[in-house]
Length: 191
Length: 183
Image (cartoon, rainbow over all chains, first blue to last red):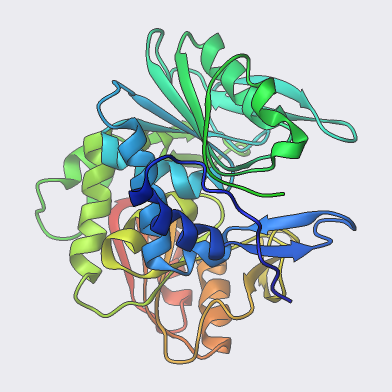
């Protein structure tokens, strides 16, 4: 069953609109996943539309080119899909932020709260140097808990986090206000 | 000691030396090939992608299937460059829609790999991408999933091969292309 995502174009500028429309309509909503009542925003259908996927990356690259960003940090696993193409285009390092015990070298860890219980995000020691300017990328922001942990890891390593970037925001969950004052840039909002 | 494939391509030494070996991870005796240090060298990462793109851009590939999670790092840039769809191949219960799944062997026990129904059509020409091939179990599960839905798997492509584990022979006749071999 395909449900239409109600989206608002978040970017200014008419020239963005047709790209955003195509991106938004390529996202599939899957009801009751991972549990009843959740309308899951599935970006895998966006990845099946090469133009929509390219436009998604291009919109982020246009936002971040020429701003001295040397680190793109991507949150496992869907941040690994969007982060590396952005990093490659702007000449930045890509730093994976992972669930516990996945990274093989020495790590720093940050715990964060889930709806029920807690989880942990890790980053390799030495991946990021003090003074580096960083971007955090994930497919979606809900409550902001994961992104907040990501910001903490980067700041603990001495980086300056410029912005968080996501394809989708769920504004009703108010994650935008939980990012330690960091700005958030998204392409589509879903209600 | 890292030996390189692809002839004498001048980009390979930098790619090979950007990979870090971590002893005894995830358990004693394993020399883990860590590609995160390659991702910290923008030129080496760019060159890695370029070498795959150069090989595949004129082969009418319509699907890049990337194996979770490190295949998600290398697959999408290749897909974007050649205009192919990217299809994530995931651990159980991660994909939200209807899936097909394939079991494969681990050293102890088994695991399952899943792909979304409808992502791939009969006649699609596919590549399977992962960071590394060891025993070939994961890649052969990916090949089977793609073939079950009628795709033609043209090749498997990895950054690193561990030739002593003979994964290359376990791909059911599908060719394998790698950039570096690690003893």
